[in-house]
Image 1 (cartoon, rainbow, N blue to C red):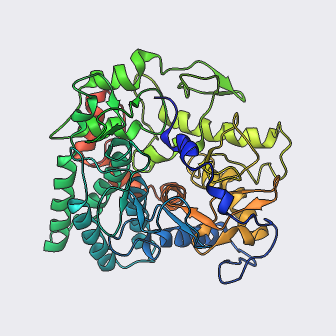
Image 2: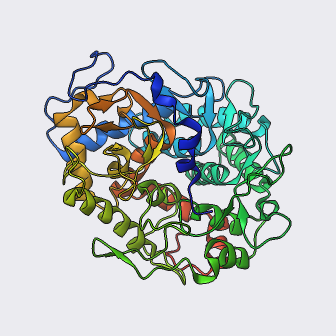
Image 3: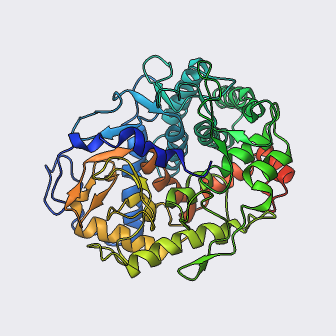
Length: 457
């Protein structure tokens, strides 16, 4: 399965923005929706500002009953494809980690966050699960699955992996011996141990499958192999103390018996791994360099297939060099406006990347790449906040915009907002990397798969 499900979302929501009013991206919005930055004195202040705003998407903007992240927040209050109370499991995993940043930065009290986490894990324990895995979308009011598509109404192992990444990070943070913290750890450990990763090998095949439904079985038929955003799923599946996969599932399924390795270059940067199996595109959208690495630290991480720091750095560098080169002459592209990833567009949800570029910039692409390209990412951040305040709202930069097509939308997606504060914090302090990488189960999984990494006690 080389095409990301998040790119496939285009098929499901291609009509989305028929309902959106196209806005002049240079025009001022209602100031109640706009955070105007007249003059930002330092890069630290800029980073503080965007972290606080994006964290608040998951704190104030959370679905109130569950405490989980809404799939989307539209400041125009139009929701044409799913109800406002729809929560996203993967985006909620990102949000769990973002809230930890909020505690460390003093935006959220530790006690309030602890209460929120208990609320969340209690909801997750009662929500629909399918051999321990949650669905992609859940009704935040009832805990029942909200189908992502007709046959996607069961377990989603990739989204579950993103959630578990966040849960395990939270458990490492709350390491106190008081009853409330111990109880939270116990609840998280129970949820973690109940995920049946091995079930998703479809009766013992040497590959993990993305979906299973009690109504449709394996009909979605997405074996996950070859490089994309799903490395964390294989690491966690190997790490499970109760339902682990064997190393052969990683080697034969994910790595395709070594065919995952690439010797190609793009913009004079080594690709390291093969981003696409079934078409001629060389590089993927930038979220592939973010989702698995919110907790999994690519610095010093390597296995028989890749140096993951070089892989992720080169991914971001290629996107930057592409925008500077700007082969399609799209308006605005350059060293302070770059980065393509799956997001909204004039055509609905779209898998933006250099070889599938329609002139839309998604701020999360560059902003979540701070660990890889700090100078280049800072140029984008300063440009947005100093020169284009109409593209920044209550919860940070809006999801996407296009100067080429004179288009923007006052809307947010959890999966795009979440990586921003987390990856910025990993750039600033390494907080989430340190927490996740010291988990003993995670270390066992990495050891089992043959990874080299810096062990944290």
